[in-house]
Image (cartoon, rainbow, N blue to C red; front, top):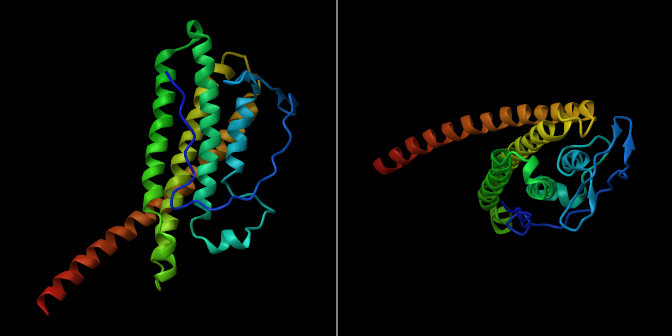
Length: 230
């Protein structure tokens, strides 16, 4: 078992990200006392809180307006989703490290599954990052093509990352909530449901994009056939 390195936010989507304010961490909150695990630097980490805070990096928050740079770039939301995935990856690494520290208390198959889910999420995100329109294409295009490409990649990315978040919460539930090590079950369920709502919404958008791409491909084939006959 090994940890997964954070996704390098330096591809086509890379643009400066404004620093977001996180709510201060506390060992106690309305849901109950936090369970702190150790990371690779022996620093205490509230993994459940980290999984929740990751969502705030890429999911819409009421009362926050987009900056001019974000509005100007169709790839801005995709970049925020990468930051959310990186935060989830850091939390996954803490869970993997915890399993390495206590192998006698660990289901190795479950940890291997967690590691593979992390790697597969990164793999899909790299493919989506490569399909984003370049700055040159965005500036030279007089169509909605760049916006459509960015919208599809962004919705697909949010779907993949939210599935990853849900899987991490499932792992956390099985290993820390159900075992009574962490008693914040209501907190876990509340935010698991929130991620599931995002998944459902993104599935609808991705499905619509898929239908549109199928129709466009069919129309393009028909057009090419006609052009060859001219």
